[in-house]
Amino acid sequence: MMYSMNTFYIVRHGETENNRDRRLSGWIDTPLTETGLQPTETVIKKLSGVHVDEMYSSDMGRAFVTAYVVGRGLNFTKEIIRSSGLREVSYGDAANMYSAEAYELYPQLDRDTHFVPPNGESLDQMQKRVFQTIEKINNKHTDSNIVLVCHSGIMAALKASHIGQDFGEHNISEAYAHDFVGVFTFDDDTVTSFEEFKG
Image 1 (cartoon, helix red, strand yellow):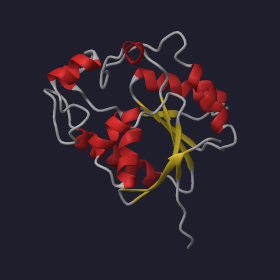
Image 2 (tube, helix red, strand yellow):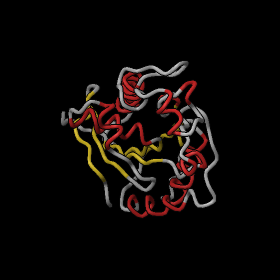
Image 3 (tube, one colour):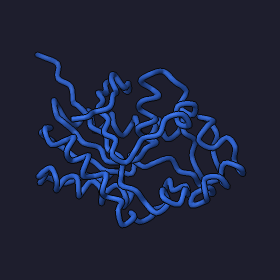
């Protein structure tokens, strides 16, 4: 029997008010800005040549609204499955703080892979959660093109693992734009490829 592998396309949600105001969000939701979905038009163009078999979204509103618009733009008519496992890292008590304020109070935040902010989770814990979630999705489908609409931190978790870089180090050195589309493969809890997808 020939071995088949799913192909994942990962999309970041549109710009939110917290993104614009340079506040941390994590597990709190914040509305998209009036122009927040403009980058999604570019995402749809990049993915227009891909036959999408399945769509999954973080269960945060900013991601699901983006996923809905992307799905409509690609004429995707199946259910978009929402998953809490695809959430951004939980910033705990630092959520909704201005980024500069949060990093002053918690210098290790977003830098130290194993630092856990009060009532939050570490980057390492988030990465493990995301990998467990993607492993389940990967095992559920065969030879499918799967779109994930989620968060910049998820992209960083995947890319850091693939290139063998410390997650915290990668997280502060790499920014993923709202129109970024990544393509990756995943097998046995391992990111086997990851690159930017330009369509």
